[in-house]
Length: 459
Image (tube, rainbow, N blue to C red; front, side, top):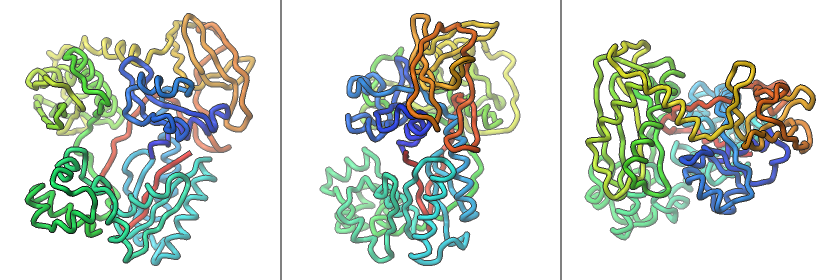
């Protein structure tokens, strides 16, 4: 699933096919959102600081995300999944679970394999991308199978083989086992799934507690009773970032919290929601996680109000020693706002300004409108046609002119204020497909799924 954005960019830009591509924030606080398989060879991975990625792969193509473009592709794929079954549970833009039995799409191993093969072919035909499919009897196993299938493959875990498959795998393969839990189990001498089974349920409960211990032991036995849930009411909207290097600078922590508040509000507004409770999440250097919340008098989607509340919550948190993860969320959702008349809305222009600095676009005022030239985004020139921004700076913007259906295109450089050059919508990867403007957006992720099919888009 992590290659999705980079795969879409490679399909969209013929000159980048087969080359290292990194998608993410290009500003001083940017992190990698997606690295292509070619970039991963150099050690680049998601959530890595962009500066570190540039040191590892200096010759890679570095692009800012086109989230609405990726969402348009995601909607095509989700449409194919819903044609298979009414029970489709999206996990993110590029991953979902499907209950094939509920849709009558599969009833045994052979029919499931045929359904998966047809789906992969349909994804290729509709989007121009490839997908990896995992087939199994439970959500957990379908997820594991789809990981094993990458890239561009299909894996079916046959009933009765689950225990043998899971046994030698790391405990980290199981849902809910993150770095802290994995380290706790390792210190107890448990590193594989089979060693969880050998330790026994009582010992696992003693180590991890009743709720987590019972559930983890059941999954080690390949038992997963979670159903595929097609629809969930959104209870909260949140964003968070994990940092490859702990943040020690208190000023930097404050700026990160402000940036996360801005992103969270954008997601609220895109969903047409507002909320009353502001939540701050801080994971410290020792993996201890703190959450603090503040409930407002009424629901809001005002970026200044959310920023100020998050800043107040941060003041009550000790970040001495460093911060590994920060998150800002809003709960108590409503589809209306009740603005605080005394809120200091003056902070909103600052948010836009900091976002521009973080992404570092070149901005020119031409024909009375602000124009931004972001690497990877689409443009059109009156004489040369459709292209994409390779880079910009010092009053110049470099454009490569090519389309998904062309060969690698030629590169030309223009003044950033050239009246013949303008931003445009992306072209579809497959003729007749949808296009969307390349503006930043984010998709909330859901939970995982049961008797089904795990899907991850590759390039």
